Length: 483
Image (cartoon, rainbow, N blue to C red; front, side, top):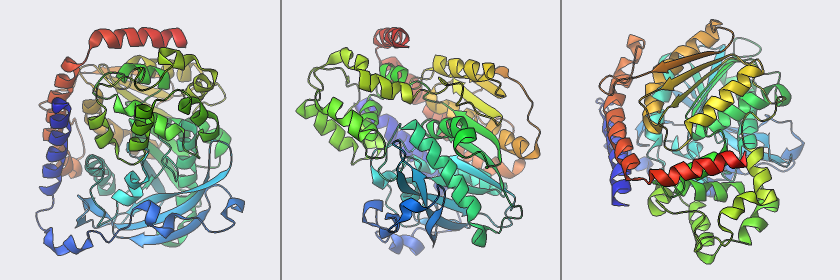
């Protein structure tokens, strides 16, 4: 536990130092009064949809507001215009729900294109919504988002309009992939409708979707559902990395590791009303002990960092957490839900736009083999995929290793310069020079990420060395027998 605490506090410290070093001309004192001025989502009436919103079409804008966006640490204002849209989207059972997307518009923005960035906020608690954390004056509940704000800053420097939705829906239904995918697509619709402020120059803005880890759940499912759910959108490409493709495989991979808390967050997310409450909660409540229910309740009120620290190295199969042991994985309801959230199983759910998919070969959270399987399936179904394996990378280092490739993919997608067909590439990126080649305009941002990735790589290795590799091997064998 002490190792994990040092791991996360080191990451947070390095990100904060990196962010602060970029804002030499501004001071914290000027804007400190903004603290406590921003209510959390469950106390903010903006998030409550108006009466009768259920009759609106998916993607309809229900209300909007201008906001002051936070560049870093939620006390430094950014120089970009910001808006938030409450929009109508769809729950797992097909009913209407409403969630929020945040729009960033830089000066002299390109008015014919949009980048949707899905953050990996990985939480079953509504106060961890990106829409809250992006606002100037919000309290620092999700410090890891400061690193992803750096990536968004790189997109803004290239004059892209960027939107970032609360894709888990109004109740933070973490790992409900289909819900996340529909939320992403409806966010794109909503932003495209917001012409009064964004002044789109074309009738349909071209769009590229980007996401890593938890954000890749949203991007992967949006790509899969695009042609069925929102075929009118002009999608030019999708970029996803570190993808949790197979929920069962991921659960087994991280059980009894430093990342075991993600399993608790996933249970807490999947039993939300927007997800599988009616079907799944009775199943879990019949086997969870008092301790297990307390763990789920904790996960529904905390951002993921707190949950990971509290429940590191726990086993979801332990008798003091639930009474069914590994047999729980064979329960027909749970098995159906897990399969329903496994990417690539249905040929009818196949992306149409080209894709960049990248993954660390030694990913300790989301099994690399499952991404390989997904790419092969999608390539068989005719999807154009550029698949990059970072041979010397684990989960968090692959995020940074892939940034330059993501920026290049976004630019080429909008230019229509992406090749057709599937290609497979391997890369060994040096920790001493992790960023790769980028436009000189982006170097101030990318240089600030270099010390972060070095620290991530160091602690990635230490956490891996502290895990029980034999147990993880047995877990992966169990995963294959269930597929």
